[in-house]
Length: 268
Image (cartoon, rainbow, N blue to C red; front, side):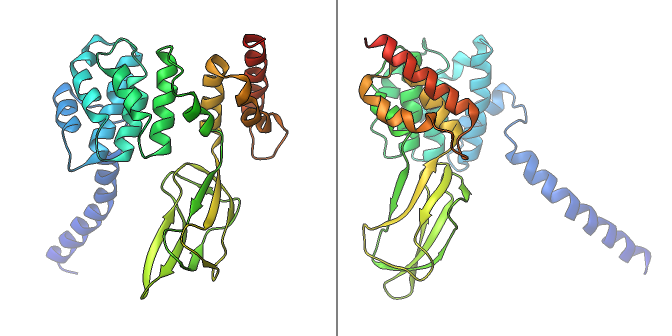
């Protein structure tokens, strides 16, 4: 091997190692951003992950009571109407960290009508910090399984297995319909697949394809909020989490018990 070939080989190997690192570095939310970068990222409409990264770091400043975070409060109120669901979801959480933020309360109330169940739920959880129980129905909904229906009549050509954990937006099944068209059926919430139509099953438009149980973290946050604002009629949604079930953590079970006690004491 000539010297030039050795050099090319070395450079190629170096680039192969460098590219994954650069990708990780540019997408890792923990990378500290300067004030200028935060401002730029919050307005980077071409890269929603940049907006999310900036939102997370603004939220961290808010929780540390860092007064510099207030300069981006108008952006937080603005992003409540962002077209990207993940951005709105993160934004709803961040606005709940400071109940004095101008426009935050009003923005969160509007987000209770968001098309995304996760955005509605996060907005409702944040409103509890404002002493506002308007989003209680959305909080109760966080305890309930997501029933996923078919957008078209067709045949399931691939599906995941019951019991499989799934992220929000995670693929649950693929549907073939029309003239060899394919639709991806995704979970609107993070959790675990309870049931799903098997490969080869024929489904009608609007028919149930899968049921996804909510993730423990989501349930725990909802139960903590209902500890403060829950009512007697919410107990039916809370009690299933008091049972000793394999997919329910001990923390969630204990929180469910404490939440029921708090509701009973408050509504005597």
